[in-house]
Image 1 (tube, rainbow, N blue to C red):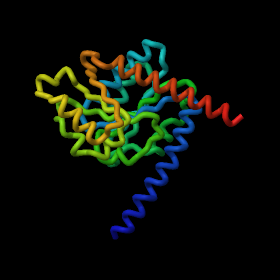
Image 2: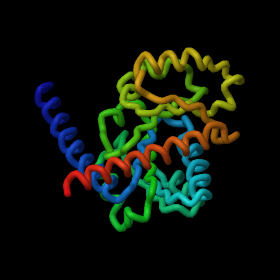
Image 3: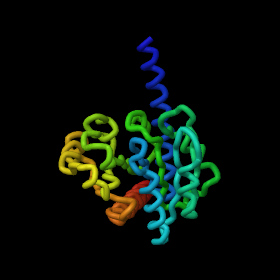
Length: 232
């Protein structure tokens, strides 16, 4: 049965990749910079996103979020307090988000009204690494409370990262977090990934994170404009 299982898995991934390419084209055409946030459960995705969205809106940036969890709408309700458009995906037993789930939750939204779309993935460092959601940036969160060797234990996920956010840095001393060891582990698996220290509680690194997003979106828009001009 193993070859059959592999064939089914490949078929699922091929379909997801096709839908993800379509999503990416839609996002770029609308000027939406999509960010896929991935981590283990409890690493602080929602807290980071809550503070990020609050600060971005204060700067006049238009943000929206799609939140994935196996059950409950708790995180979506929490993020919706910011006043930004937020939608929940309850996956049931599915341990990751897929491109078709994201596409369905976009229905009814005018994408040109959004500058940044955050996709908070299901808390899991395994399955989400295989599923492209059409994002422009994949950010993997590593909490100081998780230990320094997570990148070595879950190499596919960290290898897929464009950016690694070290979260809960205000707790680093209390849990004897060895930042140098964590950075060495990240660089061993994903030397291409940018690393930022953050704390949603103290605000450390949040402005730097936002500046990175703003700069990346500007670069995306320039690239899209150049491609459009080349086709004329």
